[in-house]
Image (cartoon, rainbow, N blue to C red; front, side, top):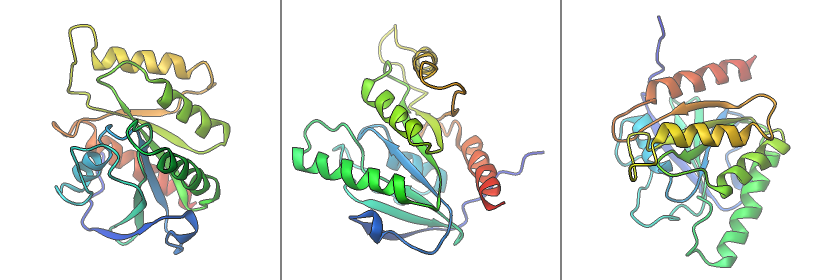
Length: 206
């Protein structure tokens, strides 16, 4: 019998403009990364079963800082700035690239990156580039496909888009990263993702 971890308490701790300003208390953490409109904040809210834990906005790109949320006083969910928002100023995109990469390369408490991929659209080059960068730098990653309840047009089914994305990933990975299908509307994948994260934390603690 699987015991699904409960998020009894989710507390916003701080926003950091630089990796060096992030909390330094050695608690394990999971970074949530993805394109600006992929549904990062919605996923955090679904995991916590609260509507306003993370900021959600109809305007993509609202998260411009590294936001730490302390879960059950024992581990962190980290909401990172979204990438690929075309209307963001060039200076903001450059700042995002520098401080986010610095976070990944220097964060010893990072258990894994949850890379969110929009399953309602065909594979996007920017997502593949991000996944390949994480792979080249040996940063643990789990693919979290979002919006798996949506179909945009008759030809784009989420399962087909996921299959196509995985096939492209295999060009650069000997072993395909773990992946989970989710929906913030139906709750699909919530328990599976929480269980997966719990298993990764247990492995990290050893």
